[in-house]
Length: 279
Image (cartoon, rainbow, N blue to C red; front, side):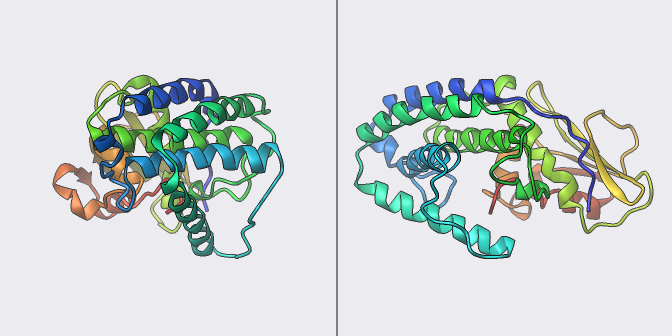
């Protein structure tokens, strides 16, 4: 159990910018770059671009048009993840027969409609899907849109990372991404007991980063962004590692030499298990 004290995060205005940057990026790729391996282990650049297209089409079909070709029939989070992984794999496999040129054209058609749809929603109405990784059984549209922003940022960043082209590692695009990811921090500690006023703080240094923390209050973990001077545990890692770690692209034990934990090591290691995607 936890209390989410986070204020709404407005990112809907960033979707058209991300979409434009993605299309411009894809239009520059060479045949070899389309085949480059990404950090999403089983996917090449073209596969990730196809997955992003799936996000556009699935959103418009299900949420805008109320058409669900396949519905989740399970009960557990593990079953949901398996279901989503299956959908993703099926789509990417089918799209292998589609040319890069066609992928770009389809992005140009669906991306605009996708952005317009999310811009049309009342941010405080009930969302079609809950953000499970933040511990929500029901979400508002703003939270669902925020989660969708992290998907769009993350997968475009995977493409850029694979071919060595920057563009998203700046305050405008990265900070909202990591700010949303940090909404999973209280949920990560849902089974962790601690003394009243215990603080766990996570810091990403630099202009594009920030500080996030959770504090034990009346038996619940409450989140905040004001830097505290006396955390029981403080975790410090750089921005480039943070998106890889909290998307489960790498695990903490693989990069422990790049992470600093001050104070309580056990609490720090729990924080590093945070996963802000359905994986």
